[in-house]
Image (cartoon, rainbow, N blue to C red; front, side, top):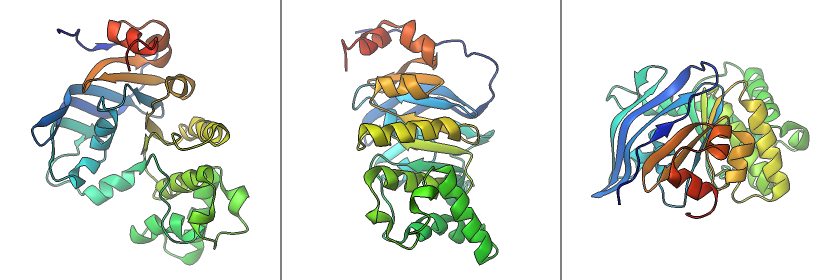
Length: 266
């Protein structure tokens, strides 16, 4: 079957891109998971990656902070630039890169430490605080930005694992923003949460985009429509269509996009 080529809707306004992917291919051994994907990520917006299970959206997301480097058989080609720099150049410090491009995973994964130490871990190892008071200020501010401080302010020394699922996910968001990143990648962050916790995370993302660029992988088209300004639709490892979220959901150009949104594929 011959598929149509990728289409990009015109973006509203002239929002600068903080990350750009050009002709990206990803292989797991001999199996190609991502095929020649090019996509711009606009600054201080939420970009949603949608598509059926196994279409490559999470694999593509992990390219942005080189998490695929941790998989021995994975190979990435093409160019991905962050603030104008090719992140796959040999001289790039991957640890520093991941402090600038944080990640929140599908399943909340707090460290087996206290709530305070979960958030303090990154600033401490990166040397971002010169005193105990400064470290405490970073932790409190990060918890506030993650919408969690009021709920845990009187039990910061309790284990992070003692929190509810939704609170644990917000703790992981606080941990990610504590090292002052520019971009936060979220890989289906609400898939294990109940509707109330999901709504809290979605409201949080809306406020966070003032300070961060967010890229979210979601299996929920409704969530993508609610929270994102830009949407990219993946199918069988290809980027089929991308652009303004409202345009993607109300007036898709490609037949495959229309079929997915209407439930005929996926």
